[in-house]
Image 1 (cartoon, rainbow, N blue to C red):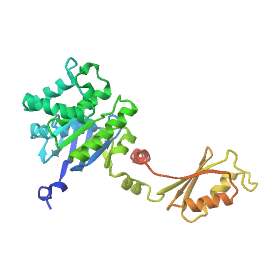
Image 2 (image 1 turned 90 degrees about the horizontal axis):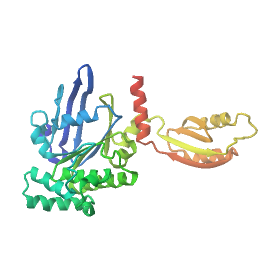
Image 3 (image 1 turned 180 degrees about the vertical axis):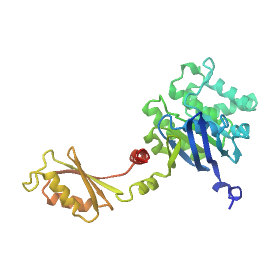
Image 4 (image 1 turned 180 degrees about the horizontal axis):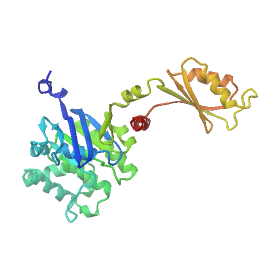
Length: 331
């Protein structure tokens, strides 16, 4: 079935096909294919210089691709950039406001630029300032705002035209940890309540993991993987999906063996389901094909080892990213 004939909720709001951008001999974005669904929070994750911002500029029609195309809300961004901007709210990594105007005045001005009457723009600006938790700072000049306050006002700024999609490019840079937490919670709340599609570009793995439904891993202009964290983890670590971490005493002494660590490794490797064992700094990492926590605990206790702790490690986005990055480097 053609995408145009799909029910609206199943149509991709963002569709990138073969999207490529070159600067001379340098390929900044290399044949990028990606679909982002309506109401989804998608994290575009990669190091600085990976091509994330260039991709966003092409999606907004602010720079032309060498080949391929970007459809946003069913509109070709290169051919109809103005129409795309009417449907997309964009928060760059360094948003600017008029320092000598208050937060409210800045928002009213933006509302008027988006063809609202001054009365309607003022009404809407006040609602959005309350929504992003900035009511107490509405009458304060933005030149006195903190970085976190500027980003909150920036979020109100992109929402004033009722966008279908919001794109956030490194939105938490320079914000303190508490401010980051509050900002990300606000993003999730807005997306869920308003049905907004959110594209969050970042190099902060933990932040992306906290809020995104799916992620795309971007390295050297290429999308090397995309999906939710559990799917990516299952694909990468299919042979060793479980890691049991056992904390032991400083001095391992098992049944008089001089190489007690080696003895324990051999002991554990004989267990059906254990694929490999590492020992470092009083921590045994036992890689398994299934969850063997109870069996491993029993085995270690029976070996008279000083067992201090036992836990099952979950693969996070940092593990996934590092694994993919290593694979890409080898390739």
